[in-house]
Length: 331
Image (cartoon, rainbow, N blue to C red; front, side):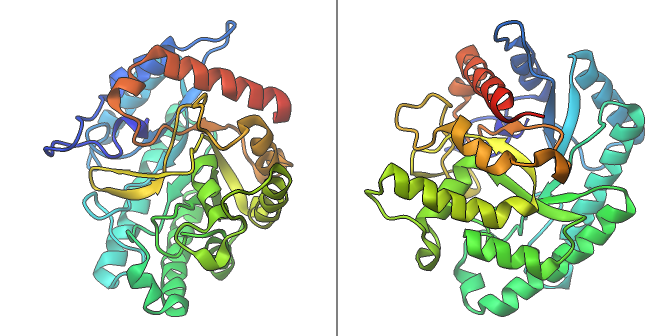
């Protein structure tokens, strides 16, 4: 559901958010050869969800989602400044806010689980530290700080029977390259509770070393053989940690909207400038997926223009692509 919210707002250069009910209706309308979407992943912030919603309010949201024929899978904790969270790399006041957002997400997860609308999935987080400049002032100490915050968040999640997935994007400090992401996961050292969420659009830019040239695995002008050799190297390192997966496309560019910094640009699945064979690339991440507890795959249209999101073709094209991924690699 977050493509209806991320990068949206009421600023002069922002498009308005798309309501939860509208996003549900767009999802429900998609159909390919008789198959429809099974459920949604859900962003826990306004205007879709009030972080202070009562139990009854949250049960009403669960009823609405279920009435459309959907389960809820993974949840996105509102860990960023401007929501209820703050930087995982910040001072105690900031990290306490970060942890409060994780607690809030675990509370909602528990209500959804008890309701029955949610039976699987993780809670997504990131470092909530925009950009890498501050992190670069002392990479070792700052990664250690993020890891300490993540470890406390993982303890909270474990107490609620949940798992956290850290999504690697080039805009998030300490998570902005495949190597820095791996170092952070290993520093946390709680693989049973905190793992990795792989997004095809974001991880393409990991290969190119967009915000970490020292960790680039490819250079412009690469051959197909060079691409898949590099892709295998990256996925072999991060796949053992991967517990959630996003189908997406990237054209090699970055994109930002509203308050969201520039990160891997999400493109329609059939974008002619797309760099990825989605079905083939997904296979590198989904080997042994069931052993890592992955129960579903999700698509991400983060910061798609509203006109793209409101076009039924967008949804049918991604559904068709996901069906192909499932047929090739599903359990």
